[in-house]
Image 1 (spheres, rainbow, N blue to C red):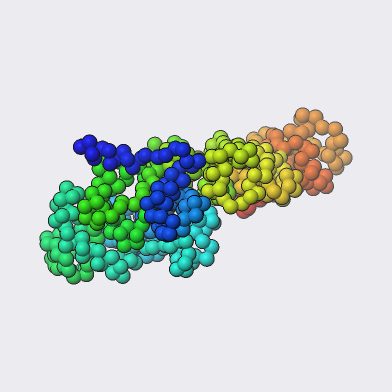
Image 2: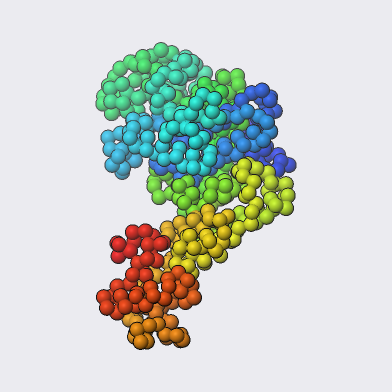
Length: 509
């Protein structure tokens, strides 16, 4: 690689660390490039090959944080969410997944029901995060004056949106091929008019027509439907950037490395389009603990944004994504130690905000407009403990901690239900002995009578302190539950506790 090429590649990763947050570095570059009167367009794009996961969200989170930084600097800004559903479906994926059967090498958007379901769920998650506006419809579409737009590339290509630029690229195929070091026929693929698949080989390229042979259905024909001619990924990106006037785009570091899309297309902007390449926000991988590779939606099994929102508020999630430098990799897990560490780190962060720390205040301004964020809340470990000892009664624990802690209590409860270990999950094999004295509970408790009570009521040898049980269930309920087990083998209080934690589970048992 030449020295100039290496310089161009490394330049993608330069940052001015004097800014209070990395998002302000990219925002300032955009302000300097376009001036105060220009609306800056930031694109976040992804392919609906599978459910969007916590790795995909880093792309959108970076776009959102730069958007917020621009607003803080007084610059108008718009986020464009682009679903790349004109990309072809891999044959292996079509074989493995029943809802893609028969769609191999066709555009992702051709599998309409599946693609719509995946994209709409992500839009709904972004609405709950406060990133996509509440007035957007289910597909993410908004009024023209909104600071948010959603595009579906399958729809836009087939509508002929990009045909003028496609023709320009086809006419300049020779020059583009030289700039990219590829053969002209490899710069485009055609979705066959006959079978709809991209298993075609280009025979002759022209501005208004392309002749191709299809390996799938055997067609040998010339098409004038330029909307079916999809540029290779590098050209496709530059085409859409040009049409939409995109000024900024986050990109994973694998797309910014030497020889990658962001590196190779610099020459297209400089020598063919005569325009600036967008300001690129390179970001590192998001991994899950125990997984060496990046999270993959097409492989399945990756955590989604919805999984995080069940157990964390949006501002904490944005804190986790905004806290590390965008260039750094980071890992996510909902295991006990990691879950506690996120809340502990967030509470320490809020303490710094209260103390006026410059960088903490800057990040806080990017992730929320709420001013009550700095209210001191009980630690997550304490909240989890109270829920355990109060038999998972959310209302009771909220009353103990105060209404300000209600959200944290709900998230703690959701984490316990999905990821925690309930103190009655394991039924002890030992049978309880006789407990009642004259038809009532004993007045004085020994270690053995305490053990007998818990075996009788819950099938476990220990649990919350007895005084907590007497707060949650009155004495008459405890006596009736002992009779229920002695007479019928039922454990009604165990069922009630499980219903508090995981509704419906007691019925399944």
